[in-house]
Image (tube, rainbow, N blue to C red):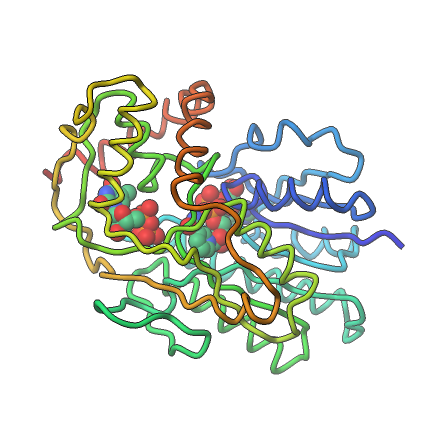
Length: 352
Ligand code: NAD
Ligand code: TYD
């Protein structure tokens, strides 16, 4: 029988790469992409696969419990890969409630619908929750996040994701719902909304706008190419052990300022500008409140148990990412008009 797989948030950055991978790799699965198409959701991301016979788009909001229940009754999904979320830390600082609604209540609605539909017959069923390393809080100069690291979320975003992780585990523990959770580090790559560091700075360099570096710029993140995250999700969905957590990371830590300097060098090369031109745009601005100092993932469990490892180096991934943005100016122009301008003004105009 055909497997009916629900992917939530498939019109967003990571979700669109996951949908593409599953639609193309598993022609015998029927893949349903459920997305509310918020500011971060864009069906342009999936233009190349929208005509595939095993792909269906459903416009729905996970905060609407009735709509979600009806969809489960109608389609009888066997599996769920849940990515739909409010995902940007800065937005969670200005509007935490949207994060609590979507990330906590929305996840609860999906869990309830899955539980009700599967009614204790869990054969061949799986609820996969896609989460973040930010639930573990902030590291000092040393150490790594392990799957056993206690949760210590610091921002409304990470607190909402931590809540949803706890709910998923609680449904597994209480009702036996089959689940798996992955906590991944910072992603980068094609189709990322230009509010996050790398696409924002690529866009600003192209348009000669300041590059707003928060605080002293010495905050550290572990960067992973989005296509490698999608490959890890495929592996964990099919081979991960029930009720387990897997950390996913890039083995690739960078201080923000060092990453920005590398990006500037690459952009000068790609745009044929004099070396040093883009770096002149670097502008230190007021820090993000509660800014987590360092994230670093120990991804040895997924590596040892499932054989996953990133397929591209950071140099390669960054180069591919820059090329994609330079070749897709129209995509960028479409989403940086309208509401984006207001967001940008509010976020950055008073911060220098
Ligand atoms: P994104 O913001 O690019 O996409 C989120 C998608 O969810 C959008 O298509 C949006 O329309 C949809 N959505 C939002 N609210 C919705 C709602 N109420 N109902 C239905 N759809 C809704 O996010 P992303 O960066 O692709 O992240 C995807 C997931 O991966 C999130 O759960 C995030 O927490 C997690 N994650 C992201 C990163 C990262 O670096 N971006 C790292 C680790 C984990
Ligand atoms: P971001 O891409 O927002 O991801 P996250 O906050 O989830 O890690 O930010 C990555 C890092 O870059 C983080 O330390 C904040 C910093 N940053 C800036 O310095 N300036 C910016 O304009 C943005 C968006 C981020």
